[in-house]
Length: 110
Image 1 (tube, rainbow, N blue to C red):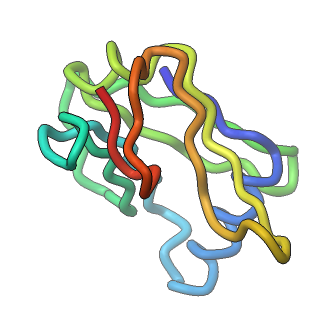
Image 2: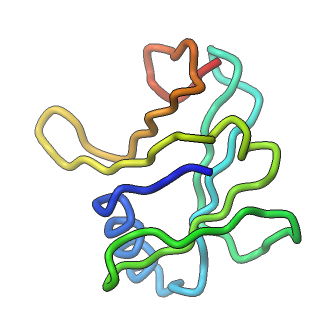
């Protein structure tokens, strides 16, 4: 299962509150495609399958639910989702120890 840093969880919580959708979870998935074979997909979701893996992340005031399907779980085991907001980097990024190769855009891996 992927983990979220406190910074990423706080940003997800902020986005959920801005949407008025605090009852939704962040779904993180891996789909075939991209220039390296797989690509990451993240979206807010309220429709869960019985075998989805669900976990809570973040500091007490910013707990968010994260959901991963069983097929994606294998490819995201040990991965970390972080959020950066700086001059050189801004946005969410995934560090995945299972990725043997990534593309130049950073959104796909194999």
